[in-house]
Length: 388
Ligand code: MG
Image (cartoon, rainbow, N blue to C red; front, top):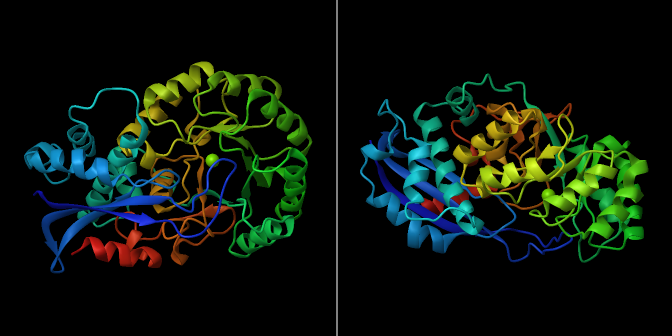
């Protein structure tokens, strides 16, 4: 069994939204296909994945470095001990050949797209949903009943208004969501408080509304917002300062009693260990949001979860960033706290196909083999492009 073709394409994100720091109007995502010599129903079994949302496509790194390394590897060197499945850790090691440690940046997402495609591929070879493959591999039961989910949105739009925000969340509520997340830090504190109050009219209570500053605040601003939002008893206060400013996180955690969430821009186990050692994260309380697609894939992500547990944190404190099917399968398979959903933004990757059945605060994957990306209608034309 061998990989016969490795393809990638950069897919632009639809929409024109912004958080406190970046506009997503120019963002794109790398979609990767690993085609094999295993033929089912007249077609080669192919694994697909992408490198999550929120950074950029990695076509250059994939084409210039990682795909040539994978093509040069012998077929046997990429298989697990049974010889019947591909070994994601070996594939990751292969695409990272001759890369120095540290300085993770964009290559972590490039490697993540390829590594995750191995999980889609292995699940398809076993003809089962990826969360089952993942749970079995890591010795877990999996949360087959579904995982906690919230609708992430509340971005800043050119036609910004509190009415628009409330209407957006009402739309998500009609889709079955009962918890929400919105952006802060892209307006004045007074304007953001007005936005929070408008959102709370839909969310109903503070524990159903999280706020995300996307790493924008300096310490003084972080503390001013912490004081201003404390009375609302919000679900969590996310990515408050620069993702690598662990000391800022610690200082906010010392005075802010509610949950803090961070980690979506940490791409390696050593980064997560630094957050644990120096960031003041509280056991049983604060939320870790690392995202496999941005961080070398599931192999590295599972090691991050191990690191959390070794230091007394619970995997229920892990809510991966990136509201899409791949992270849904990972959250179910690894029994994480839950995942986000982007029902209205970041198409064609965001959100879940109708079969996933959002309701009662939960979302479940369908029975489709692999990650089920083929069930996402907006993605199908892009998957088809990789089949030529
Ligand atoms: Mg965030």
